[in-house]
Length: 155
Image (cartoon, rainbow, N blue to C red):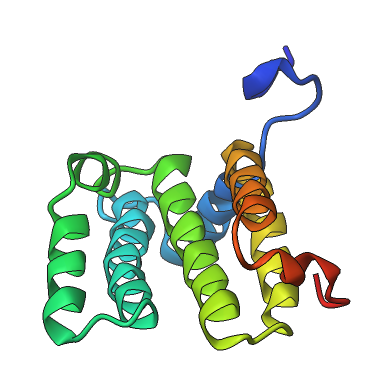
């Protein structure tokens, strides 16, 4: 039986989390702790990346710590980072996309559009929600002051 992914699109469901689970099972075995290890690491990485986003947006150490603390205490992250599901990887990949977008727009590091595209492709292997994020970023670029980014060859 074939399961249709979200948004009513036909085809196979996103496969990143399934591939990570099979890799984790091959490396760590089938213990009780093993399926909880990757989500915990992804949740911790999400907290760290949130602090990096705050730094990239010009925040000092207090705002970085407050941002990391807010993400650490968020009910969504607390609910999804203690069992294996694709949602915790979605959070991490969207955080990494936000960090990359902040670096591109803040520093003018246009070559990082390649990294953004690679991360977006990886996130698409996990969930289709990244399309909403990408269209939101595109709309923000079109309506904002950074629309010159759309004329650059790196995008």
